[in-house]
Image (cartoon, rainbow, N blue to C red; front, side):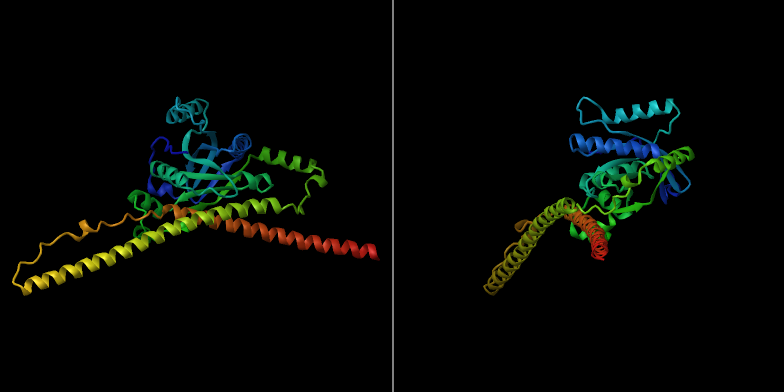
Length: 337
């Protein structure tokens, strides 16, 4: 995955307050092309670098290039530096401002993505990760979103402690791992004119398929993915419950041992004998390792994402069904008259 942090380039804290992302149409087309090529050829996750600059409170993405396929003979960091040097020679924005990745129905949240964005954001303060949803975009809904890690998530990775106590102290959950940054697509005036002319050239019957009712396969795929994540979260819950049972059993054993030792010392004191030597209880009863809670938190975030997509998709499908039923009833009424 994209564990590349790019060349280290710190910016002042005031410059890092990004309120929105402005992405050029050229960069968007490159991202779309790369992600769909990877999705159609080998179903791998497409990743690449974003180039641009920071202007006041906005991050401008003006260009991008894909990361190379996994090749042991190629140095990925050297490849990125070489690409940026070549772009600089032709007077193209070459500052590294983040990276992009393809996703499947919004399912982008993963441990590798968190780790990659942490490395980016700690080395390039203003960097973002742009997520492009290939499947949703293929159905006609361009889905391009930009995210940044929250301060709590960065603090969690710095401490490298994913125990329940640490996460509770940081007040962090799956809903507070990322913050979404609004993204705006910018085109030149000539491009806007050309798009307006092309839209007028499209026949009406080819641009009005708004009542497509073939939703069963899409909904089935989303529900299957949701079931897999629920099963995974259930397995994580079983592991944590088993850990809690072991801790309770160990506490009971420790309490019984201390009570027995106190009774033995009381009996020896009654016989004017020296008490038994003190022993370290923690050495006798070694604490069980706490299972990390990062993966369950990520799975819970994935379940929340799938649930939101299914809810939105079902609402749209239900509206289409009611609208189609009304049109069908109106058509039948006309025929009867």
